[in-house]
Image (cartoon, rainbow, N blue to C red; front, top):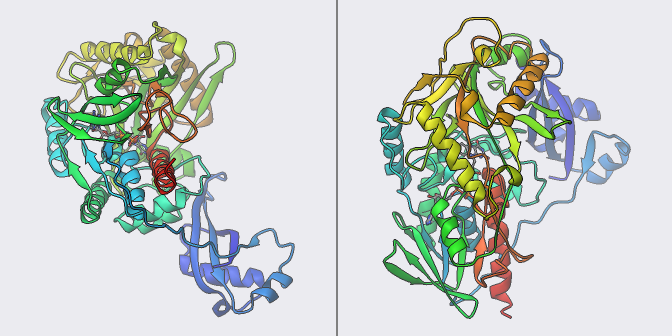
Length: 529
Ligand SMILES: Cc1cc2nc3c(=O)[nH]c(=O)nc-3n(C[C@H](O)[C@H](O)[C@H](O)COP(=O)(O)OP(=O)(O)OC[C@H]3O[C@@H](n4cnc5c(N)ncnc54)[C@H](O)[C@@H]3O)c2cc1C
């Protein structure tokens, strides 16, 4: 597939079948001369409201490559790329006992990649398989009964299982296509391979997670649910075993610690055992919910054509005097606001969508950067204590039962106008002034930022919008240090992975991090020191 043609545009009402003719006409060739044409990338260009276009990159081959390269030399839209060889995995034999703690994207993708080398591992996951987990989460959302071991953060598939499943990644890492290819092979929509903003949706993601589990079992992996890593045992600075559920010891030479940003007890364990950790900046704020149809009108300049995706937005504003920024994060078009707590007595908001993104609402986190000096403590877990304090404050302000404090956007901005706090968040909200749910510098920066967003997205500041608090689990407040080989500098055999270790943020980067760790381990096992 050596030719790549960029910037082909179609109107939403035009069929993708016309891409072949369009590309061929631009190149002065008959349509049938373009062989094996496929879409490499598809995005939306909404810069001109009311005249939204779909923008494509396609790949194809031709019979006479040399002739086309000569004829089109200097054409900036056409690029010739030599065929990329598929990655080759040389099988590795090893007696090393590998344990992976956590079955989120980092843990699962470490496992999938190890399997490519013919290696196996024991995967321990504190939560339940995704089928049982979905029931536990529904129960929580219905009646506020939290299962601290099986919830939106904990269980098979990790934190993003009840999510929009956005697969966007700012990273240009060459491993991104491999991860997308695996997701598509395990049941994600095929277009995740080429959409500019791919997403899976929580409904489809759960099926993908089950397919990955079945694949790993078939490859000889052991998967243990309701199995929490509770201790690590080292001898002479090298890991030799792990303890599960405070009761069972598993021999372990290499531990991939992929336990996510909400495993506060696991951070405490690492601190107790002298693993090198440090505080890490993150962000906190509120979630905002609007009618989706309003966001479509703002972004597309009118009603959405059925061939256009539910519109999203990404906004950011910086106060240069204070150094604080307010920005949108984890936007869920056509989704719902969800309760994402994992610890008793704390309220945590987040967002989720199905694959079709067809809920009549759009939501997004609006957050402000929080630095390590804001935590009010010097220990490596000061950020965890800071998060917990504000989650508990939100719980109290919501009146208990995991109801969240919420306020109409106009009331929050102290603008005139009527409107209640209407939201999809379950188990429900309590209408409340939001000033006290977060530190004053976050509330002030959010007010300034939202006023700016309203100038750029006309209609964003409206009585139809509600703010719900609080959004506190945006990324890890701790970093578990590692060296250039992804290994802890303080404990040989420990590989901190993914978002919880502070080296990733989001599904894709966590998965890519897991793949890199597997590659590093494979290199080490094939060339033992
Ligand atoms: C509601 C929600 C929506 C999100 N939406 C998106 C999105 O659309 N796109 C996106 O890119 N990102 C999204 N994210 C973030 C994304 O889910 C995370 O960045 C990603 O899951 C991190 O992957 P991870 O594997 O590092 O950790 P996690 O996914 O957090 O996985 C950690 C796993 O470890 C397990 N575990 C914890 N402690 C232990 C222990 N001691 N022993 C054994 N197992 C343990 C947990 O149960 C969990 O399964 C969302 C997150 C949430 C909560």
